[in-house]
Amino acid sequence: MPILAIESPVTSRVPSTAIPAPAGSTAAARKHGIVPMPALDWNEQVAAETAHLYERIKGVIPAVEWPVFAPYVKAINELKRTRNAVILAHNYQTPEIYNCVADIVGDSLQLAREATRVKADIIVQCGVHFMAETAKILNPDKTVLIPDSRAGCSLAEAITGADVRLLRARYPGVPVVAYVNTSADVKAEVDICCTSSNALQVVESLGSDTVIFLPDQYLAKYIASQSKVKIIAWKGSCEVHERFTGDELRIYRDSDPNLKIIAHPECPPDVIAESDFTGSTAHMIDWVRRERPKRVVMVTECSMADNVQAELPDVQFVRPCNLCPHMKRITLPKILDSLVYMKEDVVIDSTVAEKARRSVERMINLRN
Ligand code: 13P
Ligand code: SF4
Image (cartoon, rainbow, N blue to C red; front, side):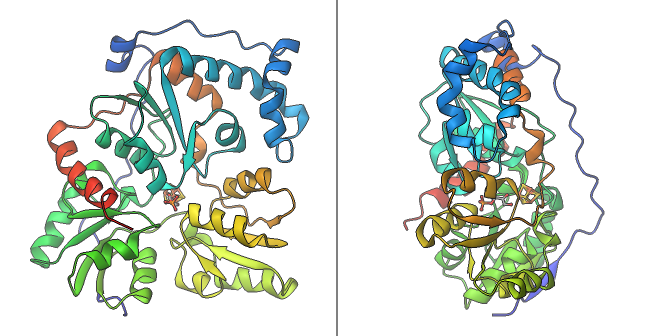
């Protein structure tokens, strides 16, 4: 089905510029206390205790860099135990985070699902702010920390709760689906959330011939191409995926006809048209694990190829390197600061969180 309309905000958006909380000033710091900063020396003991972790990433991180990372890795893993904390990390996190300190890794849907099962007192979300908010929405009584609250997302910035209320007034009775890449304010105003893993299933579960789908216009177009449901979209886009072009992929393909191209559905339609497979980050990883292509381009954020390369050294990854600047705000030193100083505490107004929880839980509870 072609898209029915692409709506956009009436007023222009000013990106949020949250100021990080000073060390020790958060509610989480008052609740859990702060601890001394561990020593961060590189010595034989640190080398021996972290050698098994370096093994996992030796194909993607040069040995000369490990003495910089290893003391942080050791300190973070020890503090996780003493703090009773877990680290959830998105597939776009850098290899030393994804492979050496994360307890749970995955795409947005997997991280949201896992957040409902966490037993620890503290969740450190290594991803962007909407992911940390989703973990907090699902765990209102736990401490949820994000190592840098300025880790935003161009999609989450593209729409507000007030925009959703205006859309509802313009299209009365039409159900509203929000991609999880939105703020808690937006989630509180919609009927159900979705991720790139389940967007088609969510749209079709509503039993409506028309659905408002926001804020990613390209994901909306992709879903419309797969479904008979008529879609009203929003003019948001991912600043990382919108930079890929079909022309660029044709150049890769012409240089090697056996090359496989797999793309995230946040990419524009001409990119998806050039691809052998389209899916969420977790579905893309599963595809590579299953198909074991000789050479593949993963048309998505660049760190993901490093993470899969570490696991599958025989696959050759061709890397058009588009980095997400927001995901890259999360670093080992900031994760350690999170665990030492209990920052930055994710706080959501309880009324907003309760309404948002309904939309997120309705998605999580959808049967496969
Ligand atoms: P996934 O849910 O596919 O991991 O996507 C999240 C995201 O932000 C992609 O840019
Ligand atoms: Fe947002 Fe795009 Fe970054 Fe994903 S890659 S977090 S959609 S800006």
